[in-house]
Length: 145
Image 1: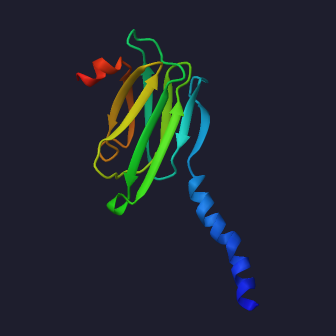
Image 2: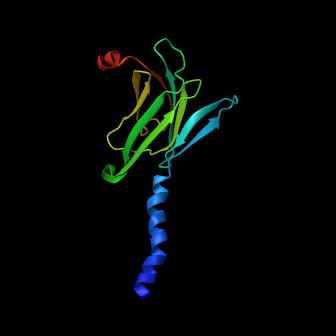
Image 3: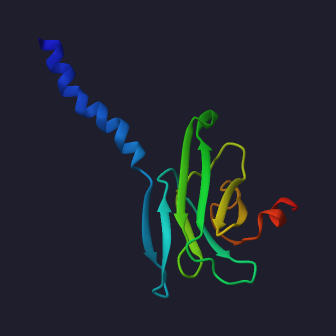
């Protein structure tokens, strides 16, 4: 009986140890100095960040584009982080809490919107706090690069 009681007391702790890391990435809306809001996600894995400005082929901001990244980091790349955020009305999205060292840099941030796609490369080891522009194009134009 004593062992089953000990197991029952440790079960909630084990559950929390499994759930909390999965909830670490948080999405939020952040205000800039000019008072405008943009989409942001915090990976909670390090001090680096990347702000992306996504535009369509005609130079207009890409509103509601989906930006995704897969980040293997830590010793041997055993830790993995998959983040996704949508762009705001100005085509901006920000990724914070990125690790400063990743396995096989650069990271590739893939954006898609209505059949258009684009990729931005980012190496947190050489530019921890960065801002990049990403221009969407048709898949055929992206594949020819």
